[in-house]
Length: 458
Image (cartoon, rainbow, N blue to C red):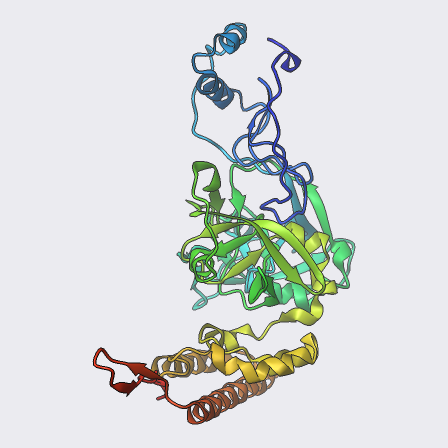
């Protein structure tokens, strides 16, 4: 075998971004030696965009393809024994580190994944069987993955959980997730209640795990929490997902912002989801700025179709920047109540005035301009009525001790929605009354009033 030093090194084109959300310098997207292929390898987090070291079978294929008719390289290839190597499709091993929480469930050692993108706690079928737990009758549900597909859970089990070296037991409901590669996934509500992402960050450790062939985004459910920030200078409510390896944005959002989506072969990679399935991304938006709480980074975002959030923020960025502590004022957990308002273009800035400062008070007067004609249309109102029915049914399933608090919280949410609706209708009416009709000229020179957009109110 020829030493890698005998092979001329390829020239590097340094970059300053990484799809894991780390501001860093990337090595070149090319072959560096016979033994090393680093396609977009990142010096900081060591993400591998295509294949990693010692992928001999695919190395042989790439060597053959890269050298072509170059007799100089054919000479070196003749010295390498690749006769016993088979061809495989491109793979995507990533940095073999994972943020995990050690603990015990029913006295048995368990390693759990802290996933702020999951709206509940989940347990693998194998772990539930190991603990001798059976799902409670009537608790089966469907769970939505990041790509919009749904998987069925046979039901929930009650799991007594203890953090490592802590005596307090936390009884939590975990939904069984078939094919989950993780023993237990601790969701956003549990992480918030136990302060794992803030006060007790010491519970979360970086562990070496076997390399995977895909980047992962493990979002489960709707994901209620949002972090307010800016993409390319424009405000957005992003999902902080400690279960995601990479920064992701929806194709719809990228198109709305007019961002360029790179769609070369190297820009479309495989994503793995929480149930073990995979899908190919639609491309990559490169070198875009994400800003929040006085800091900003430039990073690449993978683009995923059918993603029902605008932006997902990766775990490395969230943990290394300690976002849940340093940007706590920009976090909101009441996103379910305002999500439809957000897609209508209405920013409920008064809800975030305390967190984001007095500058938002000035934005309140401008928020009417962001609302399209269908804001609070009959369709949107019907969705609110349906949501209230679902919430009422969920509250009725709670025990008496929790039901009163839940009813009070839902009453506040409905008051906020009704106030926002009335406020929006009043502002639009005043705006239309104070603006004279625009005039346009027909071909015959006659002045006609330009038609107004319908308010769309029910």
